[in-house]
Structure formats: structure tokens, C-alpha cells
Amino acid sequence: MQPMILCALAALIAVSARSAQSGEPPASLAVPELIVDVDVNDEVYQRPQPLTEDDIKTLVAQLKQNGCRTLLVRCGFLGLLPYHTQLSHPLQFDVEHAKANHQPFVGELQAYLAHGTSWCGRYAESLRRMNPPAVFIREGHAQGIKVLVWLDIFDDGYPGFRSKFLEEHPQCQWVGRDGKTYFQGLMDYSWPEARAFRVAQAKELLDLGADGVHCSMSSHCRHMTNTHEADYYGYSQPIVDAFRQKYGVDIRTAAEFDKAAWHDLKGEAMVQLYRELASLCHSRGKELWVGLQIGKYSQFAVDPHFSTNVVARYTNHWKTLVDERIADAICVGDYEIMSQPNAEYWAAKPDIVRQNGEDLFSWAAREYQPYCRNKTRLYLFSEWLSDLPGNTRFFADMVRKYSFDGVDVHEAANFETKPEDMAVLKAMSERLKDKPPAP
Image 1 (tube, helix red, strand yellow):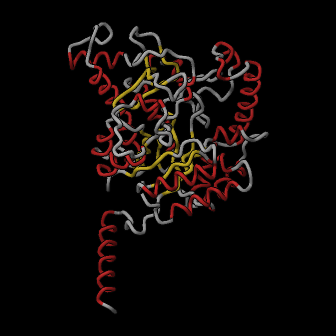
Image 2 (tube, helix red, strand yellow; image 1 turned 180 degrees about the vertical axis):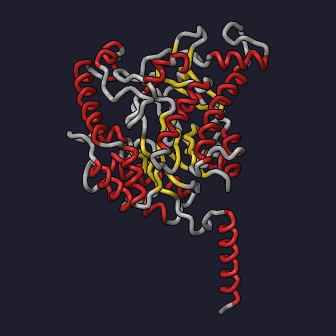
Image 3 (cartoon, one colour; image 1 turned 45 degrees about the horizontal axis):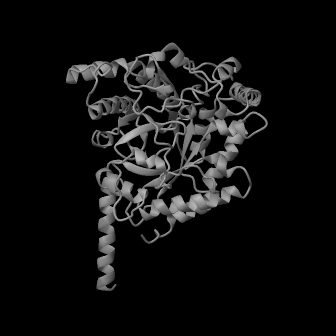
């Protein structure tokens, strides 16, 4: 054997040995992870009859055959919890609530009432026949797929949908300076009761055998009519008390106060939520994944939800999630529009300063990867696949080009409309294995 070949072989063995010690595959062998999220609500929506166990078995098998390695299964429905639980109202569309909270963006009222009633009727029948997350977990494991439950932590209100927890604890929503004007459906985790509720939800889903918990930044309540005043919300009693104790200022009455310090305290409340969820998950040998908006802050813009009308925000203490080994994986750009760097939405995030014309994916790689390396995996969120082949090629290329660990493809329903659509997912899986495109 030639000396050059011997040297190359020795180098490969050394890399493999280091990778074995760290639990990571060698860089030359690593293939980005193809994750598909399954919105059970849409699985019901797109079928004229109730969802069945056979439907789930068929879907999971197809996803496996076409390259999916991990499933994220949605376990929230605009404030309802669509599985067998006592934490939620029974799954039904509340016509009177929809009438009282009707807004133009949902369309003509009578059509909306008919649509919601039909949809939720099929859903309720599905639940009578089975427990959807349990079936997804069982079928995923049968296919050798890892299955995490997807929690909507900021998505608990919509016309016709009522959160049992928020009706019993209305204070656990983001609130204005008056202490009584709430951002309906936006859960506030500075309250211990809110954190306990989300941990209780995670516990009962892990009891079904899930491999972990994924916390999503999805928030349909941002579509609803709202104020446009910057930082209008965030004055919960726990935050007011914490600010007064730390800085001696009452943020509800002071003419001026340190807004950055205020955002930091709200962010610390979010870290505490993740810390408590991680404690539960890790005590069972399960994973916690965290959806993360990029930049210094996670923020909620309204009317529309990709505008600069930022009415609520908190500091992303993401380094704490890494340092304390809270997050096993972080999905960056979660429910944002990173593919549209010139959208006005990004003007509300001036801390994101791109260099030499770089795109937002390059910025995110530069910002997060060095700190997370060998500690926390980094995934991209695929956004909304309006152009199925084009979008899947684009996000596969972004993952490979900037060396992310994988991509959360949103969502399974996109690949079920036509028989040929599953082939698009397969093509994306194969593209992830290819040599990265040139920068």
C-alpha cells in the first residue's frame, strides 16, 4: 500500500475515533437530518372523512420510504389539545365564541361557522376512534423513525376555539400596562401556573412513548386584530415584581425605565420554561428541541404577523440553553421568513447586521454554529412550501451550503395532495446527501 494512501487511512481512522468519542458521525460521513412535521389538524382538514389509524400508518410509511428520519407531531389546535387529555375542553368548534370573536380575516361568518363545525366534527370522531399522537408514535417507531411531540407554546386562541387553561387562568396571557388588556391566546410563562400547564402536557405525551418534545413558535393568534403600539404587552405581575425587586422601579407607572432589562427578564421566564421541560425530558432520557427566532429578540408582530408592528418581545437567552445543556436541538428561524431578507419584517430586528451582502442563512451560521458546535444541534425551518419542488431544493441547498445539522420540513400535508408529491420529498432527501453547493 502506498505511503500516501496509508496516511489518508490513518487520518480517517483518527477522525472516526474522535467522532466515536464525541458520539457524532465523522464530518465527511454526516448527512443532514430530514425532519418532517405533521400537523394532525391539517391531516383531518384535508380528508372528507375522519382520520383513521390506517391513514396514519400509510402516511408514516410513505414518509419513511421517502427519506424522513424524524417526525414532529403537532399536539395543539388553536388552544384545544387534540388528543385524549383532561387538560383541554373536548374537541369541538364553539359557534357562539366564533360569532362573538369574528374578524374579517377568517372570511364570511356563516361560511366560517360551517367550515369550523364540519372540521371539528370530523376531528371529534377521529378522537373517539383513536388517540392520534399515540398512533403516530407507534407507527413511527415501527418504521424506525424518531417521533417528538410538537407543542405550540404561543398559539392558544382563535375564533371558535377556547383554551380551558386560559379560561381558568386568564392572567397567564401577555398583558398591557393597565394590567387587564390581554393579548388573547399568547401564553405568558412568567407565571408558574403556565409553566406547570405546559410541563403537564409534555408529561402526558411523553407517557405515550414520544422520543422528546419540540417547542414551536407558531402563533395563529397573531393574525387577530390588535394594537400596533410597540412593546404594548409584557407587564405581567411576576415581571412587574421582578423588575421592582431588581431595579427598584414600577414599570407600570414609571415614565421611563430600562426596556432592555425588561426584555431580559421576560426572556429569563422563557428560559425557566425550557429548563423545566428539559428537566422532565432528560430525566427520562428524552430530548428537548427549541424553536428560536433569530436575532437578539423573539418578537410578535401583528396585522400582519410579518410586519414591523412588534407588540411583544423578549430576549433570546439562547446561549444559556446551550451552556446549561437545556436544548438538545435548536430550530433557528422558527416560523420566520429567512428566505426573504429584504422583507420589512427584518427592519424590526436591527441587531441582525449582515456582512458583505451575506444572506440570513449565512448570518445565522456565523452567529450560532461556533457556540453550539458539539453541544446543541442546529436545524433550519423550511417555512411554507408554496412552490413544493423549488422550496425543497432551496432549503436542502441552504442546509448543505451552510452546514446545518438538518431541516424541519413544514409539513407532511404538502406531500399528500398528489401522488407524485412524495417523490419531491425523496428528491430533497437525496439532495441533502449531495456535495454542498459552492458558496
